[in-house]
Image (cartoon, rainbow, N blue to C red; front, side, top):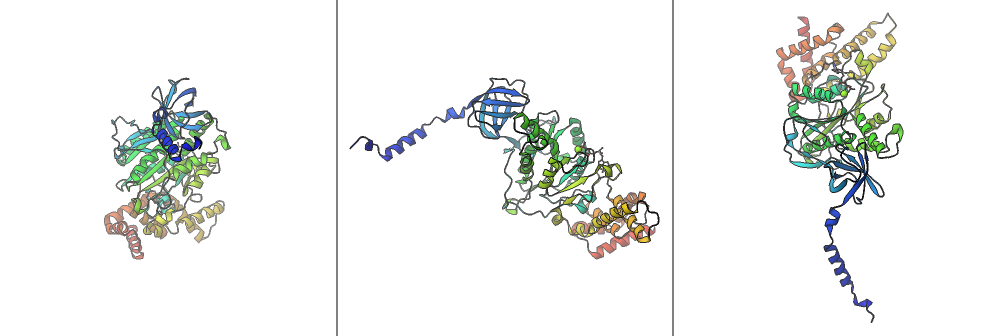
Length: 503
Ligand code: ATP
Ligand code: MG
């Protein structure tokens, strides 16, 4: 027989096994490349062949970068630091790790940058774990539907556009219409309710963030909050990862079964930072010069907000993304994208804001698609007709603007609408508790405020709430305890209010 048959299959296998076992992995581990181009926070690296998308690479100067673009012979990286020391020829090493940030309970009460490093002069943060900044969203089986309210303490929102734990509700409006204020009030209202709040500032002025942090501190809200900051002067790469990093922190708490409230302020600036990176990476621009995957940019972020099932611990991430519009145009690219991703939006309008209606919520264009399921029985009953009444009022207001002689019912309806609008005004940092909201709505519905001078409605509201609290404390206590409003209870509230009025 020939020599060929002398090699059996078993021999071949053993030779291959030996080759695999003796394979020198070290040479792969040490995969090193060279910078061939650098500028504007982007570096192109030649010689690294196996890098993954999103992997962290380390430059000789100590600066870290993230692989964002994989081309035929080179990779494009975004730099998480100054690019002045990185030069052509600088060596780059793979880490084989995806970008992650340290997480831990110690983060509560702190102000950190997008890499999780403290920037508040309160010393090091002891972390427990690392979490990838980009994590796959929980699947359907791991989730539960939204059934617990997350109250903002703002009457117009909790009554008409309720938010549930695990929901994503967009806050949208032009510049300076009170978007941040709504999110901030929602955070302040979580005091003592076991919700951890994470505020992510993206591309904002450092002074605005400092103001926000001091407001949180002033109201004792920093004790249950984390502020993740990437200011306008930070490189685009940090602005780009900030919301993902914030969410990774949130997931750490959600996985412990806790409830988290995330605020992304704002996603318009986030999209702009991503657009800058994409253009520098020479990706082809599409509509409004955004890259083609800008929808995915926000959908993969917001999809991570959810309510986990009981089996998974029952934690939740509720998110309030903020988007800024130009001249109220909600049909621009980023607003339409984020509207279609979220479970509803609170639309703030400059005209209302300047007319003194603050918070400037546009009742017609705002909606909450899942929050109704999470509203307490008391709130649901008390707020039953407010939207219809307000819609009627708005319609009638337009028609009756120029006519002078109105019949009695129209006049009454107009007055009722005006009173409702007045009651929905709310100053900053004065959240209402459940029973205060329910009582206000119950009294409004029963026309208790209708004969009060419109200008005095707000002060009358606080007087009457004060009176009910002092002289009939059991009414409020019953609402808080049973979270329901029975007909008897409503009658008692109205009777007590009449008693106050008769004085
Ligand atoms: P930007 O576009 O600059 O981010 P914004 O839409 O986030 O602005 P805010 O910063 O929240 O708006 O508010 C703008 C101004 O309006 C602030 O000075 C704030 O104090 C005031 N404001 C907001 N809401 C209310 C309110 N309910 N009552 C009184 N003043 C308010
Ligand atoms: Mg703002």
